[in-house]
Length: 65
Ligand SMILES: [Ca+2]
Image (cartoon, rainbow, N blue to C red):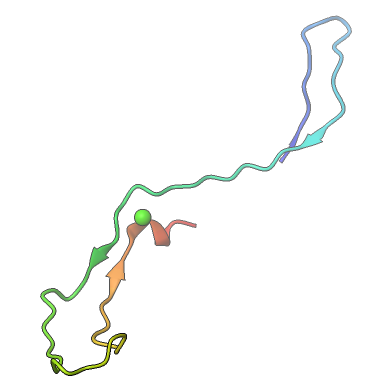
C-alpha cells in the first residue's frame, strides 16, 4: 500500500509517498486431532525411533489467507 500524509494547512502540503506493507497474522484456533480415537499396536521389542502411527490434525487458521 502506498501512503501519503497530508496536513490541514492552506495550501495543503503533503509528504512524499511511502510504501507500507501490512501483514495480518491470525492464530485464533488450536489444532484439532481428527478421526479420534486412535488405536494401534506395537511390539515391545520394537526399535527406538520406529514409526508407530500417523495422526491427522486440522487448524481452522490454515484456511485464512
Ligand atoms: Ca492455529
